[in-house]
Length: 255
Image (cartoon, rainbow, N blue to C red):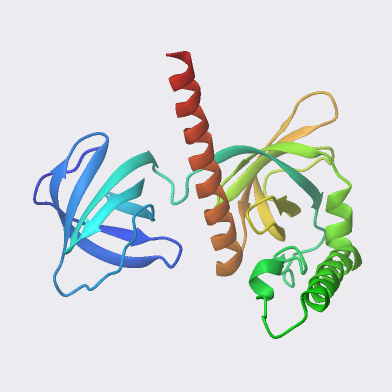
């Protein structure tokens, strides 16, 4: 990666993807300091994720501080694609879609995203025993919603599978034979802070027969909605940060 002092660059603040322009004050291979343009008021918190763009390449970074229009960020990784990839284990189901796929639509499973603590705030005017009963009822209703959803039910029964995931596509192994250009439906469970289930679709860009009845496939997501892409972006960001934190801790223990 390379930035020049005084160079004007752009960065996007996640998750809202607001675009800002700034000039480079300082730069090394670990961090960068930027000065935002005065006409761009911004509230950027420490620990926020940003994507810097330079010569058609994206660089992911964590904000270390932001004050009076000056921002310092620490680089995480970079890649030439629009979205980075992360290796993971996910509960996933995939099948080839028949026909032209004109009416397909990605979606988020109902029930997975319910967070009881966010939905219900303790009320001092209600008897504590009654309040606990209300919370229990809310929890049971959320579980019933998940169980009534056929997508949720089927995913809960499958074993985790090794994947390579980004908001642009996914790689994994499947039993069904597919070829380049085929449309594949993917249902996956993202075990995030607020777990979500996602159904999305992708075109096969690569399919390799391993000789044992399985196919290593790479999919490019097709017509994925912004809210679903954002879910994947945020999940992969947190997973990447968790992996890097674990690697740093392992190195410190080995010293």
